[in-house]
Amino acid sequence: MPAISIRNVTQRYGEPGSPQSVLAIDNLSLDIARGEFLCLLGPSGCGKSTLLNIIGGLMAPSEGEVRVQDVLVRGPLPDRIAFVFQESTLFPWYTVAENFGIGFKYSGIAKSEWGDRTAKALSSVGMAEFTNHYPSQLSVGMRQRVNLARGIAAGTDILLMDEPFAALDEQTRMVLGEDLSVLLAETNKTIVFVTHSLAEAVYLSDRIVVMTARPAHIKKIINVSEPHPRLPAFMLQPRFSEWRNECYAALRDEIRQAMAAAESNGDPP
Amino acid sequence: MRGGSALPARLIQLGFVAAFLALWFVIGRTGAISPLFLPPVEAVWSALTALVQTPQFWAAVQVTLTTIVEAYLIALALGITAGYAITRSRFATKVLEPIVSSIFAIPITLFLPLFILLFGIGTASKVAYGAAYGFFPIALNTIAGLAGVENHYLNAAKSMGFSHFGTFRHVLFQAAFPVILTGLRIGFFVCFASVLGGETISSVSGVGRNIALSAELMEPARMFAWIAVVIVAAILLNGIVSLFENRMRKGPA
Image (cartoon, rainbow over all chains, first blue to last red; front, side, top):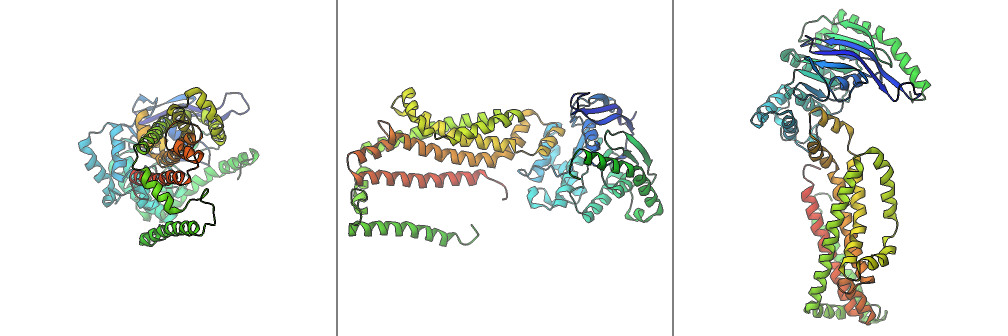
C-alpha cells in the first residue's frame, strides 16, 4: 500500500468553460511509497504548491482524490501529515517552545510529552539552546531550522515541504540540505518536497517528478538511485551532474512555455 | 527613546511647563492681555484651590468620569465586534471598510442635537455621543489588524488542525493585537474629548457643563481652573494608558 496515492486529480479555478477558467492541474495520478523522498520539480506557477496543498488537505481538488495510508483526504490530518512552509511560519508572538506547544495541543499530543519532543526536535537541527527565544531574535536560517524542527516534532509519518529553503541564501541552503538528508535518513518519513532548485532535488530525492507548465501533469519521473544519507561529495560525482542534466533537459521546454504563457497573459516576466 | 537619555528628556519637558507658567505669570503682571480673556495665573490657582474643596466639584468629576467610562465600554464592545464580524468575509471588508472610514471622516458633532433629541439633555446623550465617536477608530483598527493577518500564518494554523476559536485566539488576535491596541488608545481619547465637548455644548452637569457655565457667568478664573483640571486629568490618563499599553505589548520589540 503506498503512503500517498493521488488519483486523477484535476484542479480548476473559475467556472468550467468560462473565459476566466484556469486549469492548474490536469488529471494527475501518482503513488508515493512509504519512506520515499519525492521531489516535485517544475516551472514557476505550474501548480506544484497547489498539488502539495491538495495532498495535505488544505485545498479540495475539483476532481479526483487523494488517499493517505488508505484514508481519503477531506481536510487537514495533523496526526498523519505535517507541513513545512516556504516562509518561516513560526508565530512571532510566541517563543520557540510556545510555537511547538501550540502545534502539539491541536495534534492531540499529551502535555507531558511537549517538553521532551521540543528538546529532541530542536537538538536534531542544532537549535537546542534557543527554546525560549522569540523568532525575531533568530536569523532567517535559524528560524527555518526551527520551522523544520516543528514539522519533525509533530511525529507524523508524512512531511510535506513547500520550498522550505527558498528564502535562504545559497550557502545556508546547502548546509541545511545536507543536514536534512542526514536527519531524514534516520526517520524513515515519507516526504514530498517542492522545489525550484535542480541541485537540491537531485541531492535529496529518491524520485524526482518533473511537471509540465500549466496545466500541470507529469512530464517525466527520474529515479535517483543513490543511498542515503548522502554526503556533499555526492555533488562532485559525474552521476550527480547526469541526473541534474536529465532534470534540466525535461524542464527546459516547460520553462520556456511557462514564460511565453506569462507574457501573453501580460504578467510581468 | 534611546537608553540613558530618559532623565534629561523629562527635565526638558518639565522646563517647558515651567516656562509656560512663567510666561503666563509675566503677562498677568504686565496686564498685556485683558484678565477677562486670560486671568493671572495666581487668580486661577486660588480659584482652583477653592474649587476642589466644594462637593459640587467632585460631583461634576464623578458625572464626567462615569460618562466617559460608559461611552468607552460601549465603543470598545461594539467596535471590536463589528471589526471582527466585517473581516470574516473578504468581500464584506472590501465593501464596508471604506464606508466605516468615510463615516468617521464626517464631523459627528453635527449630530449632537440629534443625540440630545433622542437621549435627552442628561448624561445618556453624552454616553451615546462619546460611544459613537469612539466606535470608529476602534472598529477601523480592528478591521485593519484582522484583515492584515498574513495568509501563511493562517495556512500553518490550518495544517496543524487548529479549531476556529484556536485560530482566533492564537493567530488572528495575536497578529492583530498591536494594531487593535492603537485603536483602543485613539478610541479612548476620542471618547474623552467628545464627552467633554458634548457636556460643554449642551448638558446639565459634568465638568464640561461647568466650564461653559463659568464662561457664561463671566468667571474666567474659575473657567481656567476647570480647564486646568481637564488638562491634568488628560496627562494622567495618557500616562495610565501608556503604562497599560506597554504592559500589554509583551515580547521583544
